[in-house]
Image (cartoon, rainbow, N blue to C red):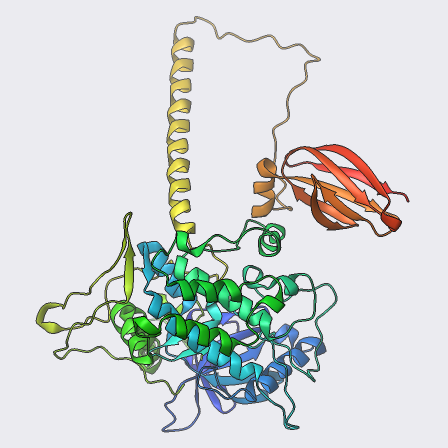
Length: 566
């Protein structure tokens, strides 16, 4: 049975060996994620079960990758790393059981702050990043049974893979594409793994990676947490890679003038494009952040982060409890048969949907106590979110509610929060403007059509005989443009029509290409996106021989300069 993501698993489909599946949280490229419980009475602790997709179960490469992930993750034991509890096979399907984390992923946290126009206090950012550093450092220092370093590199450090839990602990998740010494799987030729906007320059260029690559990725996460703005994300992979490897990095002080100088210096060092200029370890990065905030009380503590989730993300936490409540509700009885009709023999209720906050699939993995609604008298605590204004950044206090009750189920829309980890943090603002323009154009078009029909009907009523326009027999009748239903255009293709043209150039020997004095890469180059206009191409071949080519790039069109012969 195929179960849609974001729904409870029907009761007759919950058995999975020694586990009971509760809800399907998400489906990825290699596996599907379920909220589950161990079978048997008294086993109430929830966990996350990740099982390989059925159509990949026969692919030895994916099965080996999956087993490598489980084997590696089981050796990473640290409070700031999501723990693997079991690994096995059931009914021909491999699975990993891991702890359930009751909290909020950074991706959802930053999306919500962006929509509200708010930012996190620098101590909150430091508290989250330093804990993430601790988890990564533990993974980097992990050793195998022989006592030798495993040389783990996460390779996918990004906001969706960092979770802030209800007790204030920060967990690093998903070592699914991590590499370690002795791993059986190998990256297939021509593939680069990881979320594009958080890759290190050496990862993009296919160079050997070590722990400093994860330090660079975590620094990008820190920058975006401070700025609440994407750093390297662009409209295409090529432009994103170019931004990471070449473009100047905006000064974080433009967005956060309140950032201490030492914290800015640590961020700049961690984002050095040359690995030799970065911190040697994630622990050194964490220590630099802690030192920069020594006079301000240091990074936020675990209790501070727990209060942050209570006060500003309480509805998120409460929504996650609704999943378990829905799973524990008794099954609805079948409807009684109507008089004179045969009773329904095979009744199966439709799985109810999960609450909105659970539909993104970002619930990660048990053991963490679930936060329940507090109804007693409580002391109001200040929010650790700061409001960005035109003149200054100020702390926004959270006033006490009537009778001193802290409301953990505030009516805040969560349906549209980031479901795709690569979603632009500021997309909602731009989409609102685009939709407004689109609606206005539709209204204007409707008024134009109505006016045209009115004028046409008026002319016909004033003419005794209908006028027929003479059309020459050999006149060319324009054919309507019919879009090809079989070839959809991607977002990049649509943008390229007005913003880019494409250059194709080849050579019979290894050739380095410069466009308008800028290094581009080596041949062959196929459909390289370039801004429209005249271009001067310099080709440097064997023995530093050069050839100059002048061409013009047209928007949305291909320009093929053929093959350079040396």
